[in-house]
Length: 383
Image (cartoon, rainbow, N blue to C red; front, side, top):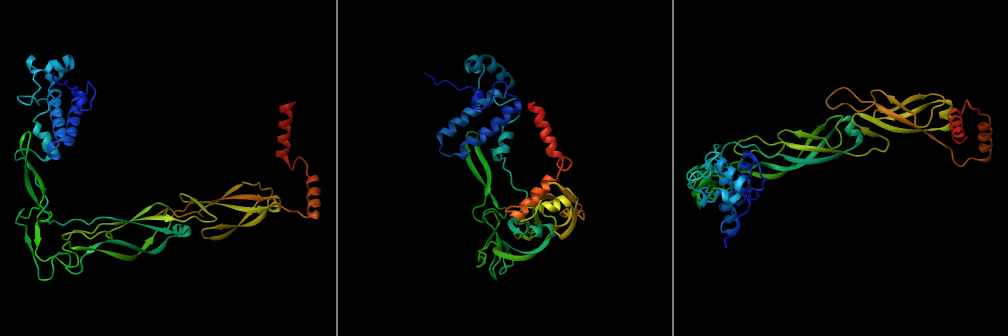
């Protein structure tokens, strides 16, 4: 008894009624995954690939797809004139199937593609990443720091040629200097040609008879470099600076890559930062809050004097304009917001207690309006 075929939509991981574009996209994905040339000797992959092609041969053809949607496998059975096979026009509806495989695998039967860029063309060096931790005030005001990073630099012994002194480079005889070679394999569709990296020269297109003893022919060597970096005022925690040309050296005369410096900022015991604004809390005494006073307020530029009004309540917030952090790469600055916290005295002496009690008894509703209002509301609530 013949094995029952799976639903063609299921084979391609689709739902019935999928659009032409969805069918084409699913086929390309599945074909790339199970192509036998990518799984040599894997019978299961080969069978899946056949199944995928059979499903696509039907669903890509509008007429066959219509019959399949209406009658299932019977609608495309060769005995009924449907014919799902691989011959004839079984892959109609989306153009030549080779166009799809040309995109996936580089083409069939001579449809190979070579890189248009010479393997010895100048190439930009890679980028490097490094982190640095700075103090809170350094981030606010800017600072110059010494940074140390590892990167690839042009070999000092061979000046980047990769060849030892007195030795020269020659064109690779296997790939003719292209850095690539054609590899032919047999597939379900005949001979398949793909471009692969030349294993003789490693894709460089050149051979070095006597490689440099320092860099082993690479033309670059890993080193540790230190240099000064100006960190601008206003940089914030987690922000990254690009240091142009401080990454890996390029190849064949190409430009160097960049280094990316990510800044981490330490916490401060007095200040918190939100964008370009600074926040802090200043404790004051009960007497200062009641009578008003000139208090000292710390800022990132130093201490400043600020006069608080008589009767200042705990939690009152005031603003010092322009005392925040400089906006990055601009002259504008944020503000500083200061919250006062009234400190209630503890461990009073007997005399202090008596004086405070006498003072409290001398107060009336005008002095404690908020408290009086609270008890009025409480009284009405329960009356």
